[in-house]
Each structure stands twice: as C-alpha cells, then as structure tokens.
Length: 238
Ligand code: URA
Image (tube, rainbow, N blue to C red):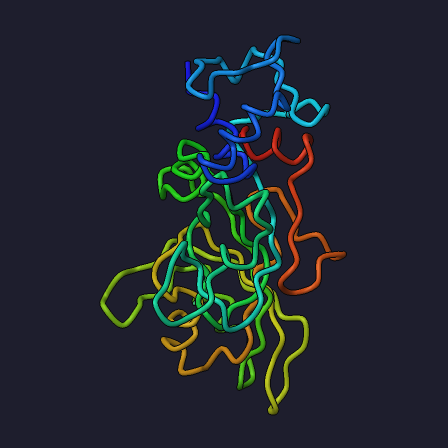
C-alpha cells in the first residue's frame, strides 16, 4: 500500500503540496469515491484512480528504446554533459529510469532505458551472452584476416581475450571500410579496442541490434519510444 499523494506525485501530477491541493479540491476519485485525505493508503496495482475525470494508467515499469545521439552520455546524471535521461519527457522521467548498459558518448544507436532492475541485470550480465550488433566505419581496409581474428577471439590491450565475435564486411578499400560486428560481451570501449588491437580505428559506431530487437529505423537520433508488447516479450525471454 502507498500514500495517495506519493503515488500521484511520482506519476508527475505535481509536488506533494500541489497534489494535496488537487485532492482537497475533490479532483481525485479512488474506486469511485472522492478522496479527501492525501495520506490515504491505496494499492496502485488494484485501485481505480481517476484524476480530473481521467483514469490513471498505473504501471510499475517502463521500457524505452532510444536512438542515442552523439555527444550524450549513457548515465542518469552528469555534472557537465547531457545524459540520455535528460532527453526523456517528464512522463517517463518520473519512473526514474536508467540506461541498460552503456554506449560511449560518441556512439549512436540502440539503447534500452528502463526502471526494471531485474531485466537490466539479465540483459547486461555476461552470463547470458546477449548478442549486440554494431555497424562501424573503420579508417583502414578490413580484410579476411580480421574476420578470422574476430572469430578466434581478439586479445585487448590489457591482455583480455574476447569471446569469438563475428565481423562482416559491407565494403572495404584503401580509404576505409564499413562493417557489422556481432559481440556477446560489453567490455569498456570493446569494439574500438578490438579494432585497435588490429591497428585500425573505429571512426563511427552505431548499435543496430540488441538480442533479437533491432533499432527502429523510424527513430531519428535523440528520439525514443516505448517498446511494443511483442518486443518486451521477446526481450524478457533472454
Ligand atoms: N564498443 C565500443 O567501443 N563502444 C561502445 O559504445 C559500444 C561498444
């Protein structure tokens, strides 16, 4: 059970003080009865709450897919930089969501944002080996030996041997290359460091797929949407 004013405030209907005034004005119905006590205890899962005549759709968790833009960091708060959470509407911020794993500041593409700690844990845990697919532009020619090196498991600068990854070449010549990389881990700067081990540099990196979910091509950089029921079901099967 939770306090009515806390529930409404968390849902973005105002500060506790503002919500108290709304309740005092008789604008809130709990199970069809006018609420007068802002400290009233309700069960948000089962009580039918109406505010200004509209029924509240209470839910505990939100699940968002963002096309993360360049220059924004994958964190909930930062003293200097804009975060992915800063890009959310208030109606989503009130759920206190956080990004699932991290993309570098200059990496763009698919990022899940949720307040579901359990799902987050499963998606980022190395135990589950969730596939992540990236599209990358590389500053040099990528060739067959690089595909083999990825397949064998690249050794990073700190001596860590990556799990086998898949490298697919879209195009490649002396001016540079475009590739898709599939990896199952999420080490710090992993894709960039894998290419550095091959004496090549990633100049553009975009995550296009996480598990079985692809980035919605209708989302421009910086845009986001809620996951569909079907997408969520697929994600929860991991
Ligand atoms: N690998 C990287 O190097 N950077 C990312 O943001 C994600 C994977």
